[in-house]
Image 1 (cartoon, rainbow, N blue to C red):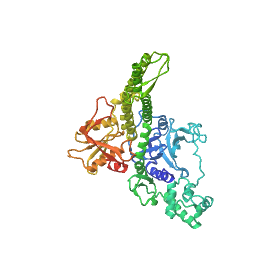
Image 2 (spheres, rainbow, N blue to C red; image 1 turned 60 degrees about the vertical axis):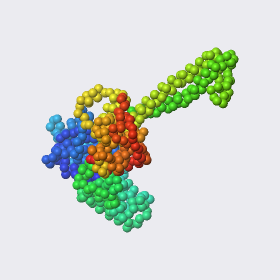
Image 3 (spheres, rainbow, N blue to C red; image 1 turned 180 degrees about the vertical axis):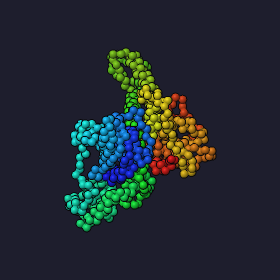
Image 4 (cartoon, rainbow, N blue to C red; image 1 turned 90 degrees about the vertical axis):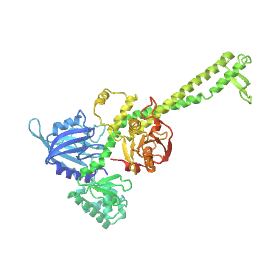
Length: 590
């Protein structure tokens, strides 16, 4: 679930305990939509993560180590100027909205006490982080919203801060039975879940469904299908939940899909409707959010950083496909070249039989056993000899063209396979180092122009990307390359000659190595699991009966001058397998 009003209330409860009265020490902006604010409080240093990420906006205490830009962004400089060194005097959630106001008090250059407020709006793609002064005048924001972007509400330095437009919902902290009964009279045609979350601020669909479940009702039932007594029962369940919120009786938990063992949701309160699923309970909502969002945040930022590279690769793939279409058309246009040679030879054999000024010439095809009659087009402005030569020239030109096209086709097909492999690697990237390897490869291949900064980066210490490491059910180590450079390193340098090498047949994907480590043979189950990894980490990850070739590493060779990741192999066998993501994830070694 996204952060709703109850989750925000849980966060504020924790922040008040740990940060209220503390002083803001350092401020960083590791991402364009994310801040890290270091706070000294109760003898500890806490790091507050504040994010306006459109997919995962939130604020929480964090222990994550984030890289900071060498040059701080403008918003960071504004925050450092106005609130660095200030004391946190208040943390407020207005009207149970998904808004948090952090009030600070510090001194200006004149030594006078000044009040500033950092306002965090947690509202999906409209999320923002805004700094205002004591008069509610905006000093700056992490996302500036002009009139061109929104005619309803501008967020620009110098403008007065106003809250986002209200949706006319009621504050659940002021819940009362009369109001609740009136809502059911007004909205009886709606489902119970819709009546609750559509009428009260900060109540998510999941929480509305939970209230219905606790009251013993199906959330999809319409309001008109229940009576006054049922409405009172529903109200009691709602009121009990709100009472827990008011008393800070939170119970943060992560919900896990039992079959796949994947995290599917989280909640600041116990979700009884998910009693059939696994749950992990946390003492801290921040620890829960760290667990829940860490992979999602990383995947989002990886996707953002990979966007330009992906666009370049896709553009070149489209170019290769168009080139292949042109090559195939050229071959089709020249497929009759043997007929042109035949006509030239027949004209030469009948040179004295061709009448001057004629447009066509009929003769017997002596080269065909059935000796059929053939009609040859003639250019009346040319002599018979010149017409014959014209056909020979056309034949020879077509012969040269086809020979050249065959070479070009091979080169184009190799480039296309290479680029498709790059695309698979980009989509499978999980770390910044993976993207750095791929970008370096694209620069070396000439697809991306080398920047001046690239040469300095070579000398800088950059975290090295490592192959994915899995352990089979037989306890055998399996390694999977994540880029063409890594595939080469894994296959050519890391693997021993008797290790088993796997790759999808004629399908772009990762090199997979089964490290036998002295074993005489590979266990059958390990081979199946490695084949699954090869299929899952390929372009055919969503396919079925994917062919995977395998052989001893010693049968794999890299031709001289071949692009990264391109190899040839012999004396191999093929196994067919349908990729299984759950099995692949369960094998991963932490």
